[in-house]
Every structure is written in C-alpha cells, then in structure tokens.
Amino acid sequence: MDLEGIFAYPAQRARQGEPEFEKTYLGILERFSRKYHRYRPLIALLEGRSGTIRKVAPDGILFLGTSFLELMLETGSRTSIATLAQDEKELLTARRHAIPRHLAWKWKSELYRARMAVSAESRLQLLARTVEGIEAILRSSSPRAVVVKNDSLFLERAVIAAARLAGIPTVTIQHGLFMQAAGMHNWDGYWTDHMLVWGEFFRDLYLEWGIVPEERIHVLGYPFPVATDPGAGRIPPRTLCLLGQPWELNSEALREEKHRIIGELLEGVARDGLELVYRPHPAESRSRLRAAFPSLRLTDEEETLTGAIGRWDLFLSWTSTALIEVALHGRSAVQIGSETIPMDDFGAAGACHSIAGDRQGIRRFLEGAQQGGYPPMPVSDSYIHYDHDIAETFSSILGKISGQDF
Image 1 (cartoon, rainbow, N blue to C red):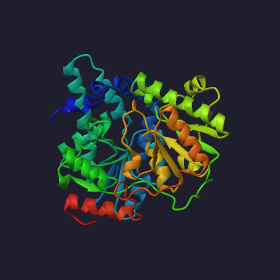
Image 2: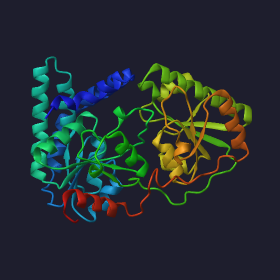
Image 3: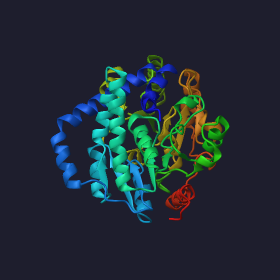
C-alpha cells in the first residue's frame, strides 16, 4: 500500500490552481497539534474515563467523527455503533448520546508530525506507526464497516488504509456538493471501498468519469435531517441572507470576486430598500469581513443554519451546500453565478434558482425579488433524494456490501 498517498490530496489541489489550500490545511493541523500537546494530560484523563471502544458486535458500524449524528443514532437503533472522536466537541457529543468511542486526536497530531518530517524515511516511519496504531483499534473493535465523510484528508485516508490492512470495508458518505466545474480531482471516491451519494445525478457522474465502478457506488440520499414545513418566508422578501464561503483560502482571485459580489449586493439593497445579512462560513474570518465591509451585517456566531432558515426571507450563495439545504427546507434559494468561481449551474440541475453575478444580473435579481420572482422551488429528486427512512436504506446498502442482513 502506498502510505505516502495519505498526504497527496492538498498538494494535488495546489497543482490544480488552488495554492492556498495546502497552506491553510497544514496551518489548521498545526494549531490542532499544538492544542493536543497542550491538553494531553487532560486528554489522557478523558481517555481513561471514557475508555476505548468496546468490542463492536459483528454487525456493528464504526463512524469516524459525529458529522452524521442523526444517521448514526437511527442506525444505532438497529445495530451497534461506535465512533472515533476527533476533538472535544465530538467527544462530548458521543458521551451525551452514550456512543462508545475512542479518541482520535493523537492520530491527527501524529499525522501532522509525519507530514512535516524533514526526511522521507522519517515521514514514512512515523506514518506507518500511526496507521499501525489505528489498525490495532480497528481489529480490537471488529466492526462490519468503517464510515467516513471523505476519503481525501490525512486522518480519513489513514483510517481507510488501516481498515484495508485489517480487512474491514470502508464507506464514504457524500458530505457536500461535488461539481463538474471544480474538476474530478476534488471528488471523493478514489480511496474508499464504497461511495454513497445523495442522488442519481451524482451516481451517474461518478460512473461517467470512471471514478468508481458501478458495484461500488450507491444512492443513499441526503443524510441530514430536513424540517418538513419551516414556513414559507415573505414573498417578496425584505431581508436577503448571503451564505458565505471561504474562497480566499483557494486563491486571491476568488477572494476578489467574492468581495466584488458582496459590494454589488450591498450597493443594490441600499438602493432598493432591502437588507442584506451575511452568514459567515466557519472557515471565514469575521474580523476581516468587518474590516472589508463595515456596513455588512453578520449573523450571530451562535446562530445555526436551521435557525437562519427560520429567520431570513431569501438565501443566496455561490456553491454552498447550505444553499441546497435551504431549498430542501422549502425556502427561497438563489445561486449567484460567476465566470471566476468554478461552479455548476444549480438551476439547470433542478436544485434552486440561479442568476448572473455581474452588475446587471444582480440588479435584475433584486428587481425581480421585490416582485416575488424567486419563490421556493422543489429540489429535483434525481439531484438530491430525500429518504424519510434513511437508516433503512443505509442498512440495506451495508447489507449488500457485507453480504449479511442487518
């Protein structure tokens, strides 16, 4: 097995024209590693209290993290589950829901140390040692499958490599929107044994591009909860909510384009008597946004997406998964187009409205919005399937993968 491939994804993104991605990702890991070493005594105490994963029953499922919490809990009502908690938030979530867990913080820190090793020999030795440690936990827990939310980043690839050595199948669940415009090098599916996607649209693209063979890709549907009727909002709207994206982490050109569009929207809403609020992405700097746009109103830091959906009238973004979630909730959602930012046309895919992001396009949009021209529209089921009993679908897919019924 090519263990060096565990570190390949960020450098690959840099070669594809996103030079800031690797620098940003390594910076995040460095801060995480420092935090881990600072609190290592407390972490050791927590590990001692929580213990490692109890031996999972032969039909059990092991999740990396708690991103798919609702799916985990529903699956846990059918079979045993456990998690590899990556930070204090995931640990507390697992403890709150009595989910057996093992702390994976140390592995993340070890992977950063290995990546930054001076010599290739040291890097490979440290990497092999980390994968062996993960493999030992997987063998002792004996799950039927290991589930991750991507197969690209360091820890996810290390877990997949360890599972392969232990003879345990791995499953990656689509966690965000994959777009043709961004290039297939950004997609998951290259390392995992099985890829679970949100709809037939994504399955067909995977097959068309030859990323995975047909027997390794499955339509799961949207894996997060969706409220059935949160309210329609005001039509025409008075307050527009722009869902932020950290384009500056990819390149300076994308940052400039994002700032141009924000400026155009601020100018337009001031002219037309509307209001614009901005919901920053977790990776965006609120202080930098305030410095660049003093008049831009930011949403409260504690406000969840669900809370925002129930509060604002109409939502805009570029390629944010949150925009599609807004549409799934039955709210007005509009994609802002751009010739600079790589994106697929969500409108053509049947996901939401789409507009041109130049000055004229934004002006036409604001005029149309005032006339109620962008009402909620249903998301095409072939683009994103929403299954009210997703745990049943998930269990069925895992049954096919393992050859055993749950």
